[in-house]
Image 1 (cartoon, rainbow, N blue to C red):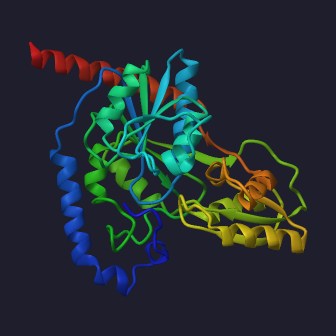
Image 2: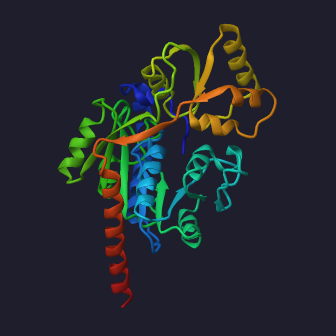
Image 3: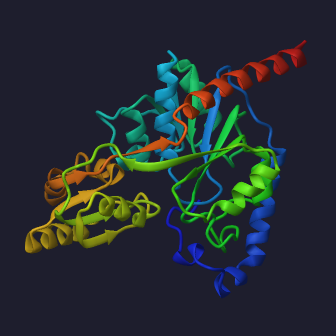
Length: 347
């Protein structure tokens, strides 16, 4: 899957989107068929999937973290399941944030592992089974909605209200991973993040299909004393503009912006340029938690950048504070129903 989305994906469809339509059609048919006809393996604990309709971030990881906290508040032991983005993709691995680096396991799994038991595996069924062996009694998948390999009890699809589904075209002509109506069929509920209107059409479509939706905003975990500070902000996430807007909401003055690709590891030249500009213009350096963990364990100028970075942590704040607990509760109920159906088939 493409990790860095071309800019034209997020604008009105142009000649590139239309020229790629035949390939998008084939990709969509294959992805839709896979979702509809895959044999889904089962595990004996509830599985909550936090996914999205498109390539790129919509707030899945902060949502997964919020759900894990809700599960823990109920006395459960949550476990995160992620595909990962590092060198250990061929090995099902329990992530240890004290020893693993982002180059081995990926940045998002490191963030998740700070909160709860986390396993990475490109074979999601194997990863889920490992989590059960490690004692998890509820699994929260960060992405994987379209993978169609593991039986999911609750599929929460996150959609950004500013970017929506971009130009609406399927990969490679746009960011959509499979036909929207096909994806909606397997979604339990939608989570619309932000105050924009780009998701309105999808929410109406979901409502007609009888799918509930929740609202949420991504906000800083604390109001850092950045007001009036002159900063250099850099971000290697799916939508760097979202991070820059967060910094501006904290009333900092962004003098220099450095957007990078999602999951991108900075080169020595890029690190040196950030430090040089910050020193020359007297700027504080601010970044995301994902970028910060990618620098962990580095040496030389990278270590200097790590030490000088100020991390802006964010959290997913649901409009209805009861929503995370409701999602966990329903996932548990749906799991019981699934297990009863499976036992009847065995009998």
